[in-house]
Every structure is written in structure tokens, then in C-alpha cells.
Length: 473
Image (cartoon, rainbow, N blue to C red; front, side, top):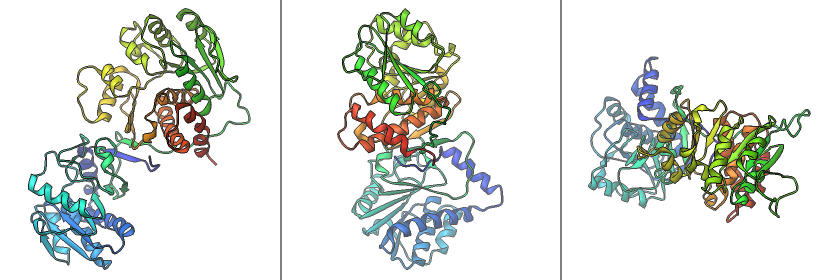
């Protein structure tokens, strides 16, 4: 994951943002030159004088390509422009007229060391013709370095899916704003490096945002264990999962961590985690009444029997910010309490299978950001839709996307760790959307510090390093 956040727009939002620029008196030609020259400068900085093939389509994305080609030509780069057809928009025709080099037909193009894709932009909604696609993909895969301007041709910007067979790109230059396909799978993995190119368009108030590195403040001189946050984790049939969440809460900054569970504490319980014995859901509910509690975690290792069901009900009835994870998500439907009845925040942390179980019918939207935002509004809860592309959605419609998560996190127990991280940030008084985003970022950074092939327990040990990395200096 990278640290450079920014807005994530739909095609319609991007069109509206550009129109606001045009309304100030800036012409389409001027904005195209601004975008093409900024993209050309990025290509020049990365590729230098590498011989370059620029592929131009019929629309304004092709127009960007002519501007890029002219910029590179002026830097003494050997440039070949291959056009699919003649330009069909006025701005693209004007850009073509300003280009001082030769133009050949796409069918006649041969591979170069570097290729720039300007065939189609973010407005594409149907598959590209097979003959064109075969030629295009052959030219891209034969190059040593590939760039896509705005979005790889063949990808649907809003639905974040491939319309043709995938073609990976080394560098994708997002013009003005990220598009959903830059950050969401399955397209995101084929955008190996994504750079946001500022072209001076405004950000809509309702734009989704890409995750950024959090700025965390160290404890003040007046801090004590309760001010830093008391996190309580409910233990179920498999208390090891609760222990992972508890240790993660400690590593993410909580001042005090307790586990509430039946029977004796497990033999491997660390001395600095308090075990509160509660033989049934009623006694667990009594323990949850403590007004000093900052956040509660319920679900990891619960199982799905009647005892687990009663623990979920007790958690829902408690007056504290709540993280519901794992088995708790499957038991929600049978609880009498409604999420909307709660006056304090709740965060749900489903992976894909759990998300489908929660959302039921109508979960076929391939854009998981849209799906998560819809479910957050329905349930009146903050949703963390987990995966290689994690999405955090708030009931008020705000969305944060955490793309390119560390793939080594695909190991048992890391979800329990993440639940504990979220609880620690909630207990520190951070609002749910941002508490969850901070936790997701720290979880990913800890995974990168932990190195390859770590266990969930080893991941908890790397969390303090991730926190230190984010401390305000």
C-alpha cells in the first residue's frame, strides 16, 4: 500500500469536475494540454530517452496521447504514434494538428521498448474489438516498460472489471483523480504502479478517498491507562482468537485490555492482559456495564451455538463502541436487538463470504465500494469489507479504499488481529470511519515490518513498530 491518498471518482463525477473547470473559462484544449504535458513529464522522468510508441484512440484519451507524443518529441525522444483511427473530437483533432511527428496506423505498429496506452479512457463500457485487442495487447506485452494514461484500455472504470482479457501495466497515470478500477480488484493488480496526476480539477464533496498514512499523537503527560482506552474482548469457544485481538489492541495503543470469558484463563494468557471470568452471557453483560470501557470486540473464536448467540446479544446491548467480527456477523440476523437501535458506534468487519451473508440478495455489484456503502447505509453501521482491496464505508456515505494490501496477511488469525486494532483506535476516541482506516493502515504496515511468512501472533508483535512509524514528530 502507498501513502499518497486522493479522491476516487466515478466517470460521471469526473465529467462534472471537468465541467466545473470549463465553467471558469478554461477550454477543453487547454485542459487536454495540461493533462498531456503533466503525463508526458512523468513518462519522461521515468523513461528518459527510451524509444516510445504512443497508441492513440479516436477520443480525448487519444488527444492526450498526441500531447504526450509532442512533449516527448520536444525532449528528443524517438517517438512513434500509432492511431486506431482519425481523431473524432475537436480537442483531439487540434492535439493531432499540433503534433509535429509522423503518425502510422495501429495495424502497422511494431513493438518499441516503451509503450504508452492512450486508446481509450475511463468512459469505456464495452469490450474492444477482438482484432484491435490482439494487436494492442501484443504491443503492450512486447514492451519493456508500459504506461496507461488515465486507465488501461479494456477496463471499466466504475465497475472495476476487465471488459477484455487482462493486460498488466507497469505504470498507470490517473488524470485528476483515481478511478475505482485503479484501486479495486481485479483490475488493480494489473495496475502495478498508480500515480495521481494533478490537472487542477476540484474534488467533489461526496468523493471516496484513497487511504493515507495516519498521524498519531503519543500519550500526553496526563494520560493513564483508562484515558488511553480500555478495550474488552469477549471470548467464546476458541479463546485463542480473543487473545490475538487483545494482544493487537495492546500493540495499537490501548492502555488497558481485558478478556471476558468462561472458566479459567488459558495457560498462555500474558500477565498484562486481565481475564474476567463470566460463566454466562448475563454475567458477561454485567461486566460490560463498566462505564470506563472504551470499546468492545465480539466474534473472534465465538462459534455459532446458543452460547455464542447470547454473547452477541450481550455485546449489542452494551453502551460502548463495538467491533463485530467473524462468527458474530453470522449471528446478527437472529438477534432481537437491531444495529439501528444502538446510540453508540458499531463496526462490522466482513470478508467476502461474510459480506454476502450480511447483505443477502443484491450483492452482485462488482464494485465492492458501492456495495459496502449501500450496506453501511442499510445497517446504520461502519462496514469494513476486507480483502486485498479493503473498503471502509460509513452510514453517511463516506468511503475510504485501502488498495494493495500485503498479500502475506492471507493467514489464519490476522482478521482477529485487525478487530483488536480497530477497537484500540475506537477506545482512543477516534470516530469509526477513521478509527477503522487507521487500524487497516497499521495492520498492513505491521505486516510489511513482520516480513514474509509470519503468524498472526508475530503480526501483533510488529504493531508497535507500525504505530511508531506514524507518530507525529
